[in-house]
Image 1: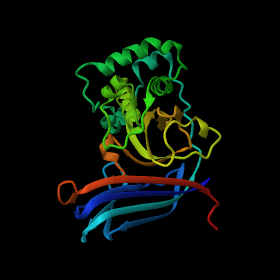
Image 2: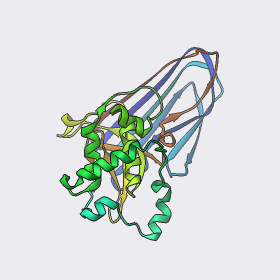
Image 3: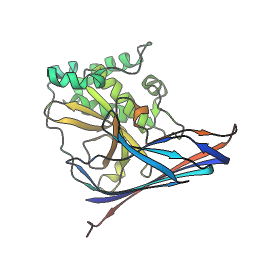
Image 4: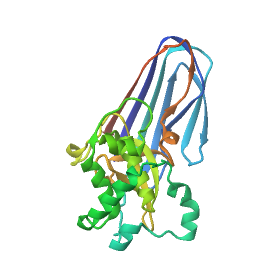
Length: 292
């Protein structure tokens, strides 16, 4: 399946401002399940681009500007070929479902940053939630991570948030609601507390499948979910927002240990107080014929 993705980001200002360097993570990495066929990146005002790979191996473009403007337009277009994801084969036994998985010494050496908890829990909000979850796990599917994603999906109310940043996982539990990035971050921190290596993923979700009617998150925006490393299955996608596991509707762009390291666009500007007027983001994804 070939997909054309257009991701447009527009920043508006009350008057001309000077832009600092902007860090753009908009290009996926080629893999067995996703092949990048063609890309284009258009920026107005004009910027000088420098490409690099970050510490996670993500493709990053650093945009440097010389001229001032009252608007910044960043338009990324991708043509990708999406293959079906491999569904996780591992069925975690009941004992392992309570304690987590066992990684080899070599795996643990590489996965340690993704095993370490990154969100403090001084009031034990996450631990109490996990205790209640473990008490109910005997009635689950037999796969701990599927059950965890399903519990978040069914127990929270999805809320589309336009403000930047990600809620603390404890706040998502207290409020009983969050955006896709809040769901993903909660899932990750809970999975880490159960002994799993988990990482944050940003990308897109598309609706070209028979299951599209079941999507909760908004098609036409960026999306976030989690990866968990399972022995013999590798990194497996879990989307608690839509109760999906290793689903081809998820189009991965960047991965990171914490949400702020995977932001699609990061940058700064210098201008008068109150200059910033607003941000708009639009994503379109369409199925196209194979390139001739």
